[in-house]
Amino acid sequence: MSDEEHHFESKADAGASKTFPQQAGTIRKNGYIVIKGRPCKVVEVSTSKTGKHGHAKCHFVGIDVFTAKKLEDIVPSSHNCDVPHVTRTDYQLIDISEDGFVSLLTENGNTKDDLRLPTDETLLAQIKDGFAEGKDLVVTVMSAMGEEQICALKDIGPK
Image (tube, rainbow, N blue to C red; front, side, top):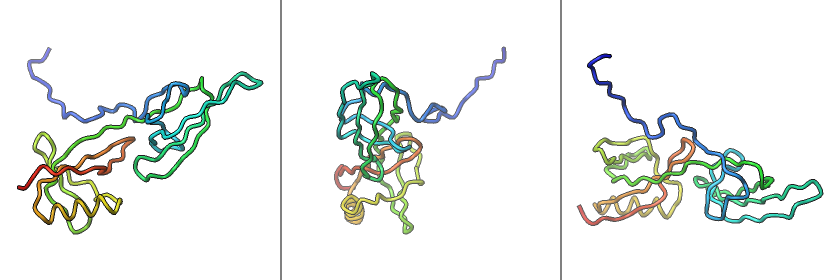
């Protein structure tokens, strides 16, 4: 055996899958589901009775977590659906560049510069106004299936 210690750069998902399987009948309202390849928050679930061929069907209505589009899917309740791994992380806002990207401070002191400003008009206005006033802002970044987007904002007081 070698005496050297190996140091690995830790990545958030370590190559893990972007989704995990879950039986359609166990997915509830306010959970998450992948519909047409998009991560969605479930806003409505209805289950039909078993038909002639013996499968109850689940009708899912979901809102895309990034684009806010409404998507629907019907799946037999005994079949598996993909459920996205959805994580929320808070970062402190350092800077906003002219080209629409934000500079964020991670918990370990590094900067994260690959995120765009949100497309939601009210959130965008709150971030720009708060930053212009010199407030200390913390943004919440939602990530799912390899995508990331700013979804919320907290003011932690003046600088």
